[in-house]
Amino acid sequence: MPFDLPAERVLPLIEARDRGAAMNARAAWDWLTASGDVPEVTLRDLEYFLWYQLPAKFLTDHDEHRAIALSLGDLLDDLGYADGGAICRGLVTMHVLAEWAKGPGSGHRALRRALEESGVEPPDTGDLAWGGIMGTVEATVFEAATLALEDALAEGEFKPGTRGWKRAQAEVMRRFLTRPAQWLDERTPQTAVWEERERAWAEGDLVRPLRRSFIQGVREEIVRPPAAPDGAADRMRPLLRVVEITSTRPSLTQAGYLPPGTVRELATEFGWEDFRPPRSEADVPRLMALMDFANEAGLVHRTRRSLRLTDLGRSASADPAVLWERVVRTLAAGGDFASAVRELLLVRLLRGASDRKAVKEEIVPILSEAGWRSSGRGELAVEMLSYTLWDAIRPMDLLGMLDVGEWPDRGLRLTEFGAGSARAILWHRSRAPRESIA
Image (cartoon, rainbow, N blue to C red):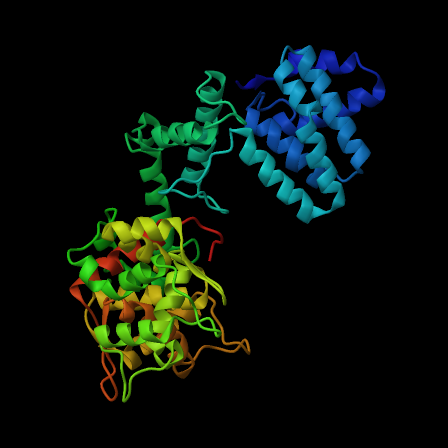
């Protein structure tokens, strides 16, 4: 479906127009083809120009943006590309341009909706989400994915707006991403992107010798997609019980807590009682933390008045592997300070047991090297890390991944289940989409 716009065909048509229309068409053609140096334009190129580059980069008013789009549409008609011309004049293009005229926020939202509904914007999959910042390999794969979708669209494999079209589009994308390609040395596009991301995760775009040295020892442990370790269901029994209880739609207290009887049942089952039976969920910090994690993981949806199971929670309650995968992805997600601390903590503990003070002393220099600072913008200090380290540890302790020593023992050790889960968490982090070069 690419549009061929060579100078020898385009320029005579532009010169035959009146001055205003010629200037508008020439401006669009110059941008789309680098003044003829790259004459082949994909459907996605055209849409991205109309819906982003034209309104965001051409420093003129809304009426002029519309005029340029219409002049480009006329040019494409004259070249025999009626479908392209229709896009230039279409309701979607006019709507997106009008939204950009309201402001960048409205424009960006309209752009995303229009691209997603066009059918040729590569969608995220369960195994590969596209990054805001792409390396050379990922950018090349993304461009090839748009061409695969354009070909499938032209061949009638799916039609945007019709029933089931997104499922059909997803199948085209799955097929493209998992089929070995000669131009990628017989790797699949998905694998090629993963490998590029892993190198950037471990080695970085910037010179960070401390991080590179720290991570090097575990890279060979995270080379394959993870599978649920043996005994996952037993280790995650507390979380599974929370999911099971949520499926019964319990009536919450006025404060929004689980019924006292349910709280006492769970506290007895898992040894969470202190000196007396709990009267409320607020008396069992471990249960509160577990409920918060289930909500964060998307297994349950909790408000002050209700607690219900999500579709994901229902799937997870029926299959421990699904539950474990969701736990791992939740612990792997995030670009905040606690996530960075958890990542380095797991790397360290895969090398062997340690204690909290030693872990903090090892990872503070690496965090500082990455640009993390205290809230006052000063250098990080070991004593500043205590609360964040505990935030990183807590969910893994609740889920049976860590053996955490009680005072005065400050030891930290991955359980066998925790070691397998740690490799999975790091595998997902090392192959996650990149949103910055940091």
